[in-house]
Structure formats: C-alpha cells, structure tokens
Picture 1 (cartoon, one colour):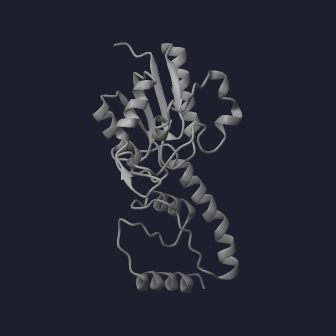
Picture 2 (cartoon, one colour; picture 1 turned 60 degrees about the vertical axis):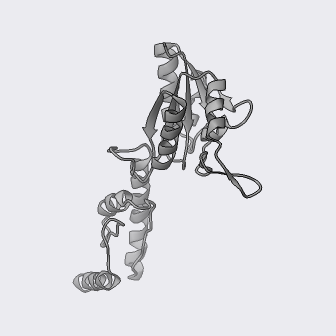
Picture 3 (cartoon, helix red, strand yellow; picture 1 turned 90 degrees about the vertical axis):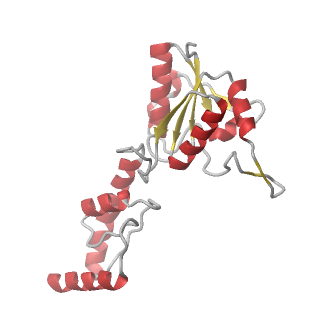
Length: 228
C-alpha cells in the first residue's frame, strides 16, 4: 500500500534541533512525495484525546525564527508510560490500546518518532502491537541511544558545556579555587568527557569509570603545586 499520510511527533526531554527535524520531515514528505503530514501534539499523549490532537504543518510555518527556537513546536512528554499510565485516582492503567486507536483514527500510514532511548523503546513496543510503520529519529543530549554515533541535540549540549567551562576557568584562576561543572548524561559520560577535554578540565568524572575522592584530591593538590 502506498504511503499517503504520515505522523511525526517528539517525545522525551527537549533539546536543540527538534524543529529542524520536524521541518526536514515535513518538507521532504510534501515536496518530494506529496504526502500529508500530521504533527502529533505532546508526544504519544496526543493520541489519547478524542479527537486526537494534531497540527498539519505547512512549509510556510518554518520561518527562520522557528528553526532557531528552542524546544519543539509540537510539544513533548517525558512521563506517563502508556502501558502503565498514572490515573487521577492514583491507580495505573494500560492505555496502549487507546493510543493505537488514536493512531488509526487519524488514518496514518506511518509514524516518524523523534525521541530518546526510553520513548523510542515505548513507541517501538506500541508499533509492534499495532502493526504501525515506524521510523525512529534518535534525539538526546546524553547520546545514549544504541548504535547511534551522534543523536540530535548532543553536539549542541557539548558546545554549551564547553562554553560554561570557558567562563568558569578565569574565575577559578582569579580566586585559586576548584570549580565543579556538573553536566547531564545520566548513565553515560559523553557530554562530560568531550566537553571536559575541549574545555581543559583537570579532572573528568564519568559514570562508566569508578572514581575515588581521595585520588581526586591528590590530583588537584599536585596540579596546585605544579602551577605554584
């Protein structure tokens, strides 16, 4: 069956580049293939409402301001697993069938999901259950999606963390202080190690490698003595 109508959504935490991906999907679908594009609002939660919540992005929507705007024009969610959904009364309920129904009410032939490791895993499970055609676009500043070299948003996060180090270093040097920059990454140290190397950090701690505070203190004292 020829694909004629696709959905696109963003799920999980926001990051740089999401609107650019939505634009790329929309422009290619409309100008190259003549498909309709439905932008699902607030991730998979948009499928739960009746009628499902969506936008129909047009090529004229993507001005320079939109491309440079942070976040996502479609909205996103990073909570509420549809297979174990928290209800107002405190109970939990499997609402995956409602999402599948919402997908089919829109008459979608395929879904392009822009998400991280958690949201893509959930959407993959939904697609397998509902028989959807699913394309996943990895986006996460943590860069922790399996088999992915660079996820959307990661390189911007490294740039921002490196800039923060550039701003901290002169103050630390002026007052002979040790300063700590904590970055995101959860169980993966990609941002920390790349920004730390680029920004000239003396010590870089990543969750993949155990560390000892006494050795860190010794290292910092050695640096202080070397620099006089």
